Length: 483
Image 1: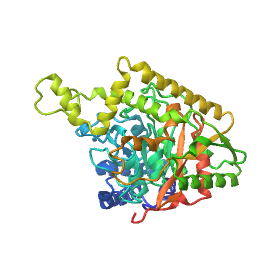
Image 2: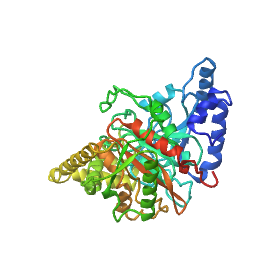
Image 3: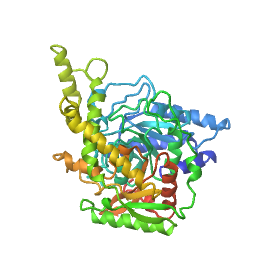
Image 4: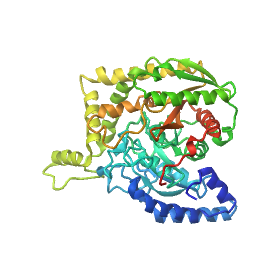
């Protein structure tokens, strides 16, 4: 049963081939057996899962149906879940039990999804390798010596290892798409505002977006259907109708205009990945797509702009963790200043501290105009580049990452080298565009992803292209040895 996709599980439950309770027990046993070598979960919620599974079976027995009714999933551990630890991968929130459900959690629970647990992540979603977690690094099931990508690395590793069919993730600069690429999954970052951020612990508020991670585009369509929609609790949520994502999967690609930016194929891209991307282009051409070279001239400025804006917003968002109201508090503080300093110094890890310091510096008097304001202007230029490109093409295609997964610890001494791994993904966050990564092949036995970007609220088009590609390739069906 662990090899079934979300869509296959929905059909199996509808046909009464197995119950949600039976499936949940199988997957919980599999997690207990295999996760110690991956470290993909922070918390397991066995009691909640079995209660939800029994309730889903009862709802089906009463005539209810739905693709997510009884389907097992897990949540990245920054989605608040009532009465359950929501740690954000940090010592700061190690003892925090959320008093309410995030909107995404509540929506998926209402649809009948079964929560198996909370997945490991880079601390406060800051990282590209899932090595900054207070609970230890997550291992890539394709090679336990390599990183799974981050910050949604726990969700990625768990789904790739067939511990469960799908999971939620969040994407601030590529944190759904990059780990999806490094673990052979399909991962989708929706348009900014498409999925509610209420109850999703913030890293950078103008960039964060929740989305689905699964093995296929079909499964991502099912999970996104349950997550998307307007939320009055979230001031950045956009009141836009949610289409039936599954209904658009089978549309023809005949005449679809795909743009390939020339800037993507620079010296920083592994030539073996470049070859796989070109193979993907040829496969889509055979399906009727029309390929056109385009330019995104301001892409070179994306990383410096992002690493000013994101840390600046993080320094503001994380100021609430002060040792007073909730979260970690140091032992025996001498006075209020000591309480603040030691609680934050002991509660936050090195990567979070680094980004808070960078952000506080960029926002400080005398530097705001030189750094933060200039970065926001570059952000507008990047958005304008995309708007011009989408006047010529329907979809933009390129690599998701410049390299395959690297070895654990290989970039710990050089944070900038890790930041450069986000070069292809962060532009979508800066512009607020939807982006998807799908499996495109292997380099040295490690998975590689191809990225698709689309205009605002065109998630259905991304899923359609990915689904048609997956009907004609088998990369997404490959399973890591031992899992």
